[in-house]
Image (cartoon, rainbow over all chains, first blue to last red; front, side, top):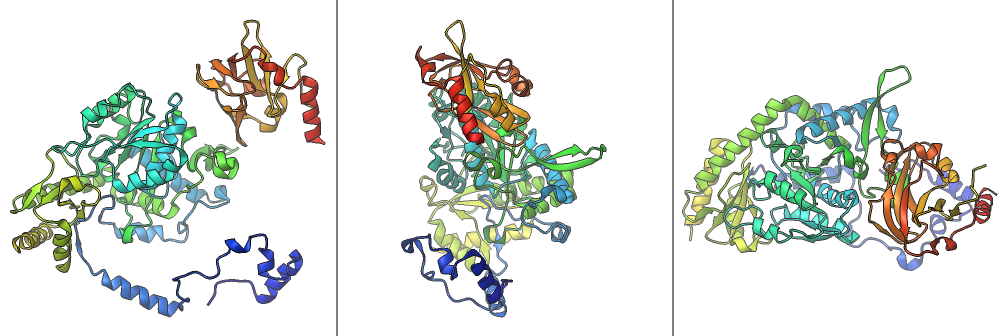
Length: 454
Length: 131
């Protein structure tokens, strides 16, 4: 059944009032050549019963694989209370409401979210969230261009240790607005930014350096030194971080002598299920001095005429509903529902709980890496400290090995062949707190068998 | 009715310009502009040394209602931004032709102000906008 409330009579009445004969006549200012006559490849509609059946059949094809995938989206335990509370009617909405101040509870929750993210990242101010990690990095690049008072170059350094998906999103978003990116290579031994290559940019007019920590390979960059170097060169520093890791790693606000200037990341690890890649949410925090360059909504806490606390959208003058084309962003909103889940997740696990999650992930991955490294035909790619991911090199193409593992119900990592061909056959593997020692053993045994088969 | 001092020159986009004795030009926004914006909460003035083209966006004035660009009425190099505005943006509401100046510019050409509107011509622009 169509969920359209207007009857044919309603439609005729509205058309008559406007003075148009038909719906087509209403849109006659759109030239014929620009109109689409039906959509190719889109089958006719299905009934609710048919679509329900189709979706459950498709979902069952996924099975319940044992997943060692990471690369930006992470499988974590989500306490049942998170989504039980998030899906209550009072919270169950995708966006900030249009009459925002009428929904004090929603605004209070966003304010709590901002407070928690600000505290986690060690920065001064947070927005109400963005679409996802990739778009948050793109928004940070554009923000750096606005916020930097002297740099006119529109050039940013994005090391190849930044998630390749994020780099592609940044290119398609900011690249089309005249921003240019230079890719800084990594060291083959450490999997970290090559300091000599970086030094090659010394003295040039560059707007910002992007630093991902832990980096895409799971390795820990020397963020203090990188941040101080960038600041000495007059660049801003954009930190791209995993929120779980911040429970045990130094927050970007404390990197180097001055701290990072803008901090962004993917919020999915905080209580959002993997769900085939989305929807997730991005977070963004910065220093107070750059707050007017920050895109998105910000909720402020204030008092009313009688001195009672209240919440309000603040600093809206540069948002798109007021500044149109000159707004800080025309492609952003907040991810209300996912941000709500993250706020409840953080509330439930607390700082100590989040640190236990992070430590457990690190321990699991360390255990996995040391066991995998003992298999003949497997080598750990990089030395040095890591968080909860690692690159392992194989003696044969990874795609075929992954197919064999998949046949045994195991998702054995992300094949790096297309983004990092110079590594040779390589897998990015991740073990979070959800994996038991038995799970790790099953993965290791299956991989050993796959590599023994000639 | 907004004030249009007789000794200044004006741009259609509601900026004023004043020749200082040292040959520099002081730039601000007009009384009409500050009234239209309402209470100012933030002002972003350009860095010293920035080279401005005539008509290019050179500053941002933000009120509780809107954030608006200020356009350079003449070409030149910024010598000084009004540092007092960072803490006291309301100076523009209180004294837009005096303490609320935005920046001082070394003009690219000595005859730069000649292309701008006279007080009479700017008043006519305001009158036609109100009509």
